[in-house]
Image 1 (cartoon, helix red, strand yellow):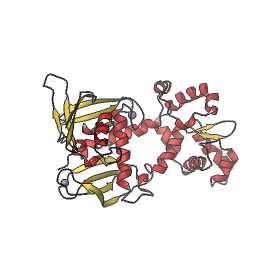
Image 2 (cartoon, protein in one colour):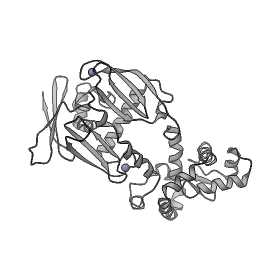
Image 3 (cartoon, protein in one colour):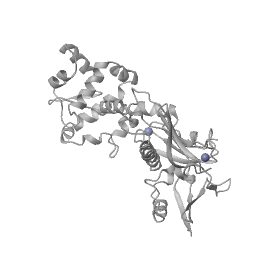
Image 4 (cartoon, helix red, strand yellow):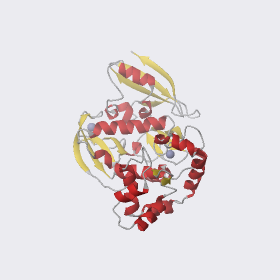
Length: 345
Ligand SMILES: [Zn+2]
Ligand SMILES: [Zn+2]
C-alpha cells in the first residue's frame, strides 16, 4: 500500500542524534572555512574575540550533553534566553540590568546565579553585556519552532492535486511532528516527513502543503548537494538496491558523516534541482520549484526507474521523466550523480 512512508521518512533515532549534536560543536569542523555555523554573527565584535572564539568553542564541545540539558532544565534560564531575543541580542549585547528587569525574578542574586549557569555555553558575556552563543540561539529557535515544547495534531484535510497512481483525491494529516500526504482512494502514501509543529502556526491547512513542499524539497536538495540538513556536516550519497524496510527496488541513501543523520528517498527526489530536469520541465510549462513534487510519479515512486547496470557493475539506474508528450531520460550512477541525459521528443 504505501510506497513512500518509510522511503522518505527520516529515521527518528538518527534525527534525534542529529539535534543532540547540533548543540555540541566539533572543534575539527569549526576550524575549517565555510563550516562556520553562526551566520548572523559575522560582525566586527566577533572578529575582536576571534582567538577566544576558537578556544570558547572547544570548551563548548567538552560540555557533556547531560550538563547542557541540565543547564536548561529551569524556567528562569529559558526565560533569560527568551528575554535576550526579545531585547534584541541578535543585533547588540543586552545589559545585565535590562535583562534583570525583563525576567520576572525579585532576587538579583538568584537571577545572577541562573545567568551564570548559561554563561559560557549558551550565552557570551562581554563588556557591553550579554549575547547569544550559537547553542543558546538554537535553543530559542527550537522553542519557537515548537520542537521542544509543543505537541500538535491535525486530522485529515484536503490537499490540491490528484494521486499519481489512481487519480484519486489527496489528503494530508499531521501526527507526531510528521506531515503525511496520501491518496484518499487507494491509500498510497505520497510523502511523509517530519515537519516542526511551529510551521502550523499562522498557516491554514490550505497553506500548509505549499510550505511543506518547499521545506521537504529543500532538505532533500541540500542532502543531494552534500550538506546535512540537520547539522551542515558532509553527506555521502549512495544508491541502494532493495533497501531494507522499503517497498522501493532502488533508493538513494544520504548519510551525514558528522551526525549520522540518514535520509532515504527515491532516486527521483534527488533530481528536483538538477539543471536539465528543471529546464526540461520549464520548457513545457512546469515549474518544479513550485509544483508540489508529490504530483510526479517519477519523484515519489520508482515506477519510472530502471536498473541499467549488470550484477558485477556498480549500481546505475535510468529514470524516464515524461512531460508534455516528451521524455527526459536521466542516468544516475552509484553516488547519486547524473551521468547522462537524453531527450526523446
Ligand atoms: Zn490513489
Ligand atoms: Zn549531520
